[in-house]
Amino acid sequence: MADPAYVAVDWGTSSFRLWLIGKDGTILGESRSDEGMTTAARTGFADVLGSHLSKLDAPENLPVIICGMAGAKQGWVEAGYIDVPASLSAILTGAVSVPGQSRDVRILPGLAQRDKEMPDVMRGEETQLLGALGPDGKGSQAVCMPGTHSKWVHVSDGSVTGFSSFMTGELFEAITKHTILSHAVAGADQGPADAVAFEAAVRAAFARPAMATNLFFTARSGQLLHGLTPAGAQARISGTLIGLEIAGALSNAANGVGITLVASGRLLGLYETALKTLSLSYTAIDADTAVRRGLAAAAQAIWPN
Image (cartoon, rainbow, N blue to C red):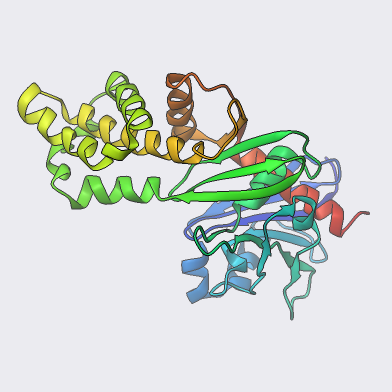
């Protein structure tokens, strides 16, 4: 087994993921929990990190590289933002040290788009982006990173030219639980998903995004008038949201731009289906793999030996 070289941490709002990485790049250990920024802000960031390091018997002198919400204003230490347009390599040199620690702990910065008409921020996804494309990526890419707040990032020859956040996951939660459509989806999870309804909704929303709120209501009216099942109503809402997201994300992109999908699990399946439904070609990269690659690139830049 390789000797440990550093610890990589992806610290989200509600989740914590830590990997012990060997000198040959292999994963020597892994620890996950729901001790995200919200929990750690109450219990102590250093204590949360320390408990996971102890769990894996990480050597006391091992450095730690962190991305995500630990670097937010309300996090452990504010890591700030790098303004776009910016090169991906700028992420590597923007890490902030956490003072008062017995080991070297660094937190990577986020990215900010300060356009007054389209202000936007990301924290954590920039590391996935770095891992997916590398610091010197060539050509133009539209990178999709699905989630509670999905990110679509436009990259040209290793430089982030702009990005947009879409509240797709959060809106799905709100619409299906806190609107009249909650009645339409009651019991939807008790049967198989309705792929046909999902694909039809993706196509409709992508073609007619201005009809968005009407398309959502058809999940209810379709049930009342045409026997749409709860699974079908849920699929229609999900497909509408994802179709709208893709339409918005590509509205300012060059025709035929390459799409890189950085996702895993259920979201990977949904977005792959949506992109295929719209006949959009893409390359998929596992989200965990991407964030580890990004953290590895940062670790190599900070601690080259």
